[in-house]
Length: 277
Image 1: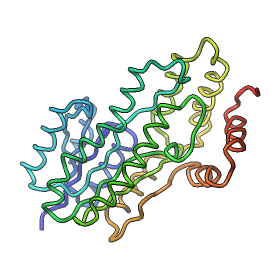
Image 2: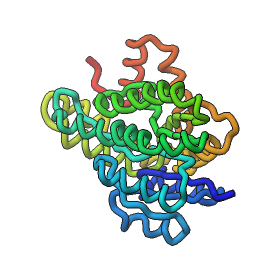
Image 3: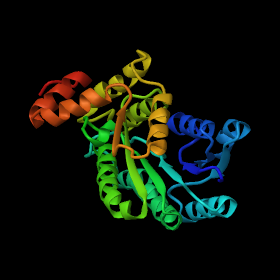
Image 4: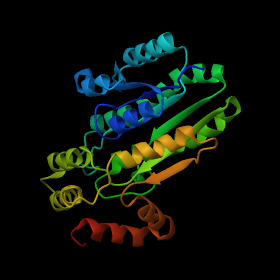
């Protein structure tokens, strides 16, 4: 029996890199995909196959999936990890940036799903793992576009799970909490650039400060905790539909589920340090 084959997007750093390494250690033939292949050199040296792929480019995605099937004849696991967080007040964020957020975080993931499903159906098996966020179950100020993409990915995953179950394919959502990656710093820079002046400046300062303080205080979890959860999801005989893992994920999701909207709004505002109305 040949080794199972996995495609991991956003593999150049953080969760994607940790996941590629974890699956490789479990005996998977792993293709680590990223836009900049030079950032995949260390993974390649350790046995992960580098794959240049831009999840906003149709030709790039088609070529990547075609290469995998040509070289291995199968695809057993797709980990849709590529994504980024673009923060800023909805009034301030240009619609083109909102569209790009959906192109990367949602449409790129869905297009790859469309491309791998024929192979998985023919095999009668497969695992699709979509990396959402605890932000796919709750909301924070100035994160409207980002949360919108993650809420969308959660709903799409639920519908897809029902559709592909008859073909032996499982769909799993991973909901990371605070993780030690570049994500928080990038989101902080974006919120300052977008809403750091003007009517929302005080909120932008508070949100950027909160994003940076979690990282500086070492309150976030290492990417390996997400890689371990993904490994469980792809190797379990019957995986859970959702895995909430990492700093704060389970308690914050639970709080959002039980608290009334305005109570949650007040709680998250105080946690972030927003100026009171």
